[in-house]
Length: 254
Image (tube, rainbow, N blue to C red; front, side):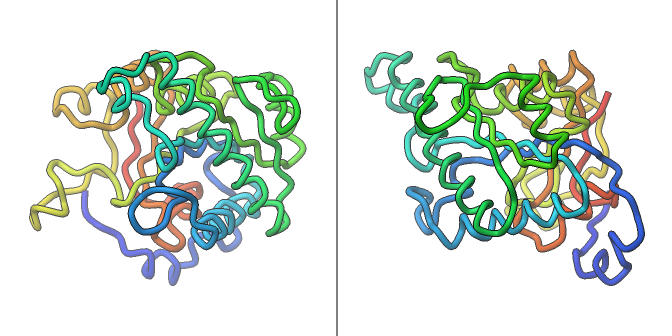
């Protein structure tokens, strides 16, 4: 446990002359990561910032796949609670993830990163259909691959889509981007004595009732021994430090 400032990590030469710990990662981003004040819509400055953060990791030689949510545009569950057909509401949410993916692809291309979008819902005019081996081939060629459209099925979250895609493309770790620097024993925004875990096992996370991902996604990761790294994506240098194996965030493993 214990906190590490990014300034300390950067001054210690986090990436200089070293090889990344992880060769292939899946980055899970919420739709709200693309939004500005208020948590809705798409903020172009924010999107450019995200693209540059992803580029920084890509430039280390790491193969990067991204699963992005659509909550900044549409949330299916609240709509279903108000009486909308759940399948319809969820399909609208999946389409929202495609909108976000197209925007992020453009931002990545503008900073010089070749990017492909693959969607579980076929939209041949704007994106490739998700094909596992093609996605892996893109990664091997040094392209960032954005995987959107969820799982292609209603009733599943983008957390579950991330867990599924990570297993399919043999990602070494799921990097879950959050606004806190890891998993704590209690809310660090409310309790000054909250302690951060550097590592946890899946069983420890269950025993402590820590919400790492939704239950379906977490179970899928546990069954496939898929590590999850929770990191503050908005701390400058945190993502780079994480893929190098430095003690940033919280790593959940078997």
